[in-house]
Length: 117
Length: 113
Image (tube, rainbow over all chains, first blue to last red; front, side, top):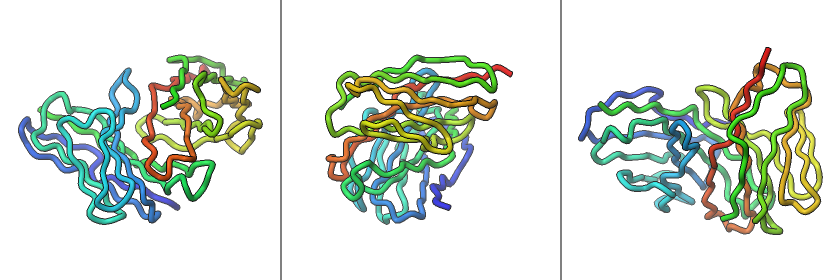
C-alpha cells in the first residue's frame, strides 16, 4: 500500500519554539505538499516542492519554511511558533502530472495536530 | 487558476442516493475534474475523476455537464461511513509537474440514520 507518513500525530509546543513537522512518502513521488486545515477555511496550501531541493510558496507561506533534501522527505518548519499557527497540518504527495495526462492521485498523510500555547 | 464552488453542507438519509454538486464555470478545455473526500480525523482520499464523459467506479459516479461548467458526484446508496467533507478540484495536465494543488472548503455531508 502506498503511504504518506507524518511523524507526529499530536504536538504541543510553546510560543517562540522552533517546530519541525516531518513527512515521508514511500512512492518515489517527485511532488510533495504541505497544507493546514482550520474550521471553515478548508485546506490551504502552505508550500509545495516539485522535486528535491525545489520549493514553491503556496497561498499562506508566512511564518513557515520547508526543506526537501531527499526525495522521500518533506519537512515543514515553524521558525518561531505562534498561537495562530495552532492547526491541523496535512502532507501530500503525487507523481508529476506530465507523466499521466489525467493527473495522478494525490496521497495524503493522516495529519498532525499542532497546538501552540 | 480555475475555481470550484460547492455548497457548504448537505444532509441525506441513510441508504438513499446523494448528489453533490460542483460548479466550475471557468474550467479550461484541458482541466480534469477530481473529487476527494475527507473522513473525520483523516487526510483526504481520492474518490473519482473525469474529463468529459460520465465515470463510474466502486465508490461513486461522476456526472459531468455537457458544457463542463458543472459536475455532480453521486453516491448511489449512502451509508453512515460516507459522512465526510467532499472536495471538487480541477487538475490541469499541462502543468508540467509544477501544478499548485488548491482545495476549497468542500461540502460537509451528513448522513441521517
